Length: 102
Ligand SMILES: [Zn+2]
Image 1 (cartoon, rainbow, N blue to C red):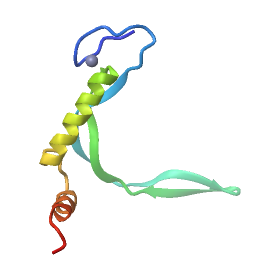
Image 2 (tube, helix red, strand yellow; image 1 turned 180 degrees about the vertical axis):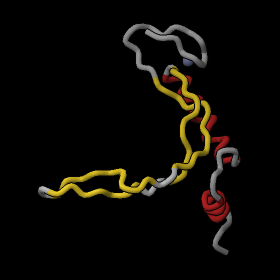
Image 3 (cartoon, protein in one colour; image 1 turned 45 degrees about the vertical axis):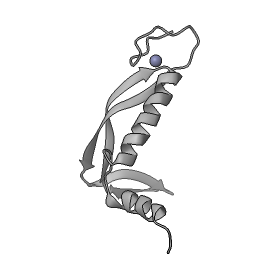
């Protein structure tokens, strides 16, 4: 039993909840030298963490499956429009699929 944070209605007991990402932000993690320790035989070896960049969840909501599905459809539509677009390879791939080989 929980309250859906999107449609704000109480769901019946023993019904599933879905966590939906309502807001995400671009982030960058620096590399960390000697962050990971791994034992090989008797020796402990240290490995570097390369770090990286990507998107992380900024805000999450507990939603009923119905709202979660609707939210996912909406998010996919926005992604197709290019609001969530992070690199041009996705859009260029879409453009190529739209244009015929001729
Ligand atoms: Zn709902």
